[in-house]
Amino acid sequence: MTDLQSPEASPPSTPHKRPLVVMTNVSKSFSSGTLALSDMSLTVAGGEFVSLLGPSGCGKSTALRIISGLGDVTTGSIDWPSSRINAKGLPEGDISFVFQEPTLMPWQTVFGNVYLPLRLRGVSKAQASDEIMAALETVGLKDFAKAYPRELSGGMKMRVSIARALVTKPKLLLMDEPFAALDEITRQKLNDDVLRLWRETGITVVFVTHSVFESAYLSNRIVVMKARPGRVHADFPLETSLERAPLYRTSEEYRAACEKVSASLLEAIGPGAAMEMH
Ligand SMILES: Nc1ncnc2c1ncn2[C@@H]1O[C@H](COP(=O)(O)OP(=O)(O)OP(=O)(O)O)[C@@H](O)[C@H]1O
Image (cartoon, rainbow, N blue to C red):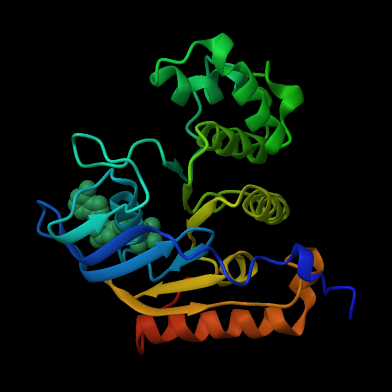
């Protein structure tokens, strides 16, 4: 066994198979006439870490919004078989979203920002306090509860945004290019944080990224979308016997995974098109 091998710490090779989200033959057109998605089907099961990749404008964010219930479908269906569904037909409280921008309220402390989703549910600050501090501890910011966003680095602001998403204890965490605006070292640290979170909490993650390297590092399943109108071009597992930790980035397995994802993206984009890879 090499230094890199640590099956204990590796992502679970057989995730719990309970479906959390089922998208069936979904098409989405906007009033502008843009057909963003066409006949897209995707099932995400509990415990998976799925990266969604594809050329710019292929509908990744649109798909994520539909999965979250924030966006409606034009044809086809979206179901959340494991969630409690409210009167509007939407899942209640099981899904959280992290966007590329941390979107923090500058006039609120870190504590106040993380409190927001619970405040919106009518939970008092006193009742919410333990949950808020636990979420901050998860992202390593327990000592910054009283700080204001202007006092934090970009990476710390993103950690607050993740804590805010976790405070409601969602089953499914949707992340839309969350680290794209961060420098490479911060991005890699946050990649490790998210992996730790995924392992420790058993949360399911759907992660939109442009980065082949990031997706190959994080995911145990890759979904590559075709250029607009978006639909699934390829859907494959990315298993590894190695621990997804910084040393993994130097391994042959990681290099092979990057190559596999990259080849699939090139196919999805088609001949002659430029590819965006960081
Ligand atoms: N609210 C909207 N109204 C009209 N068109 C939209 C709307 N939202 C997205 N679109 C269009 O739908 C297509 C898919 O957009 P989307 O943001 O989902 O793609 P994406 O793959 O996430 O893009 P990127 O990788 O550049 O972030 C694009 O052509 C976009 O301009």
